[in-house]
Length: 82
Image 1 (cartoon, helix red, strand yellow):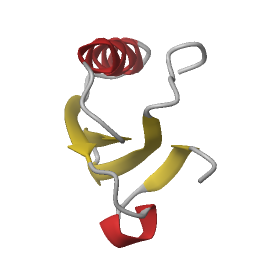
Image 2: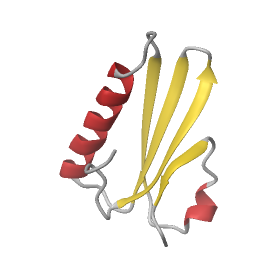
Image 3: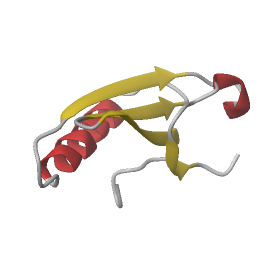
Image 4: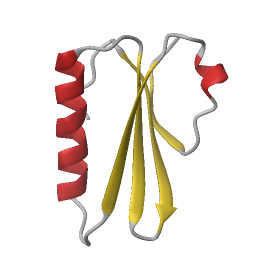
């Protein structure tokens, strides 16, 4: 994600849903087509770097509420200082 994250990215979480299914969850402050393209690239690169095939579930949440109110499951891999 180095170089791909913009100030619009609030949080990115990673959650293992099953042994072969991973959920990448992105929280954006506002919807932006350039950021959507960046997160698609991040997801593609993440999937390509796996040694075994996985099913990748990508979720995008556009929300400006306080991050604590969103109750995001999974491990935080990026969190913007707020």
